[in-house]
Amino acid sequence: MSDLELRRSSVRDWVRIAEDDLWAVETALAANPPRHLIALFHAQQIGEKYLKAFLVGQGASFPKTHDLKLLLELCLPYDGGLADLRVACFHLSELGVEPRYPMLGPPVGLDQAREAANEARLIREAIRARIGDVLDAESWGSGDDPGCDCTTGG
Image 1 (cartoon, rainbow, N blue to C red):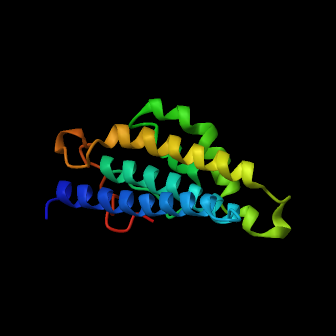
Image 2 (cartoon, rainbow, N blue to C red):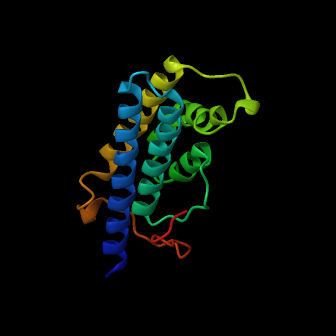
């Protein structure tokens, strides 16, 4: 399998997992009662997986991290327009994990979970607009980054 085919396959894998996270967010918010902590966690995961999909598609390397702010900064050299996602990435980085640990901060509620879901969808839409159908080889970066291990990606 060529490097381009490997990257495209890996991008599809990241997107598939992100879409599973979207399902989890929607299911958690629709539950009776809503499971807002589950929605918060998976909203952060949507953003993380889509940013990683974008980076893999560009042939870029990235560390094993859950920090959306860092991942976004790594995306910006490839597409400066993604800077519009800074606020969403900041919020999701803050809300994705800490609320699941009561001792780390004040409790969060359903409104914050809904806001996080909307921010995750914003990241999703922005990245999907840039990666197209994941099959268009012309849309990918050159893959010149020798540090890219597109099979793991963190």
